[in-house]
Length: 288
Ligand code: MG
Image (cartoon, rainbow, N blue to C red; front, top):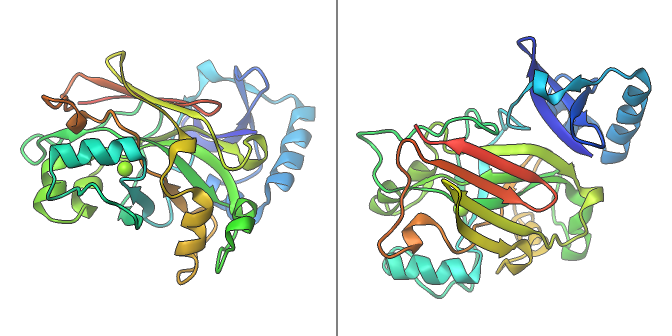
């Protein structure tokens, strides 16, 4: 199932895309957080089948897609430097801030008051931000409370997957010696276009991941190339921290971000950045 949050006649709803992905069928939940917290994937599938029988689909052309989880209940958990090729380019850009040897995962979080949806604008924050950058990432969404998860059981805790752009203000990120501020500005977290439920993606996911700026291919990798995989991330974090349903974990970005080029290729107003993952879809966001 591909689950979406969308606006129709000014009302925000949760729905499932039809097989041809040309229309959306509404689901009986008030929002995506409630859906994830109250139902398993199997239960949502049953609800979707019941809805299908009603034939109440709306063409996608008549709705506006929002981020699938427009208001995450908690900060997004993130992995830093979690693809080997990105570790190399980050160290070349700033050896003090991003050292090459990363045997232990870097965890940080990202404040998201309101996630930007597919087609939503990224604010360049002129006057505050220099060196605006993009990071295409596979985001994992947990479906149930996770505590002391064994790596071999990790897949059972995953509700689904989506695409996330971990937009980053590089100068703020390095100046403050930690990443929270430079990663958490308003509009810095586009998510979408949908959540693909975990039953549709073999674990661990091995999916092509790419990004483009103004149509130019920038990142081109595969989610099988993570340094620390999803099972180990879940096992380590939950060994001392309970994670709740609806938790979003951004698993890191491959090489090809703006700071990785010589000279760097940062984002500017008027640019359009597209992040896509095989089997999930594309997030296309203009910078303004
Ligand atoms: Mg990132």
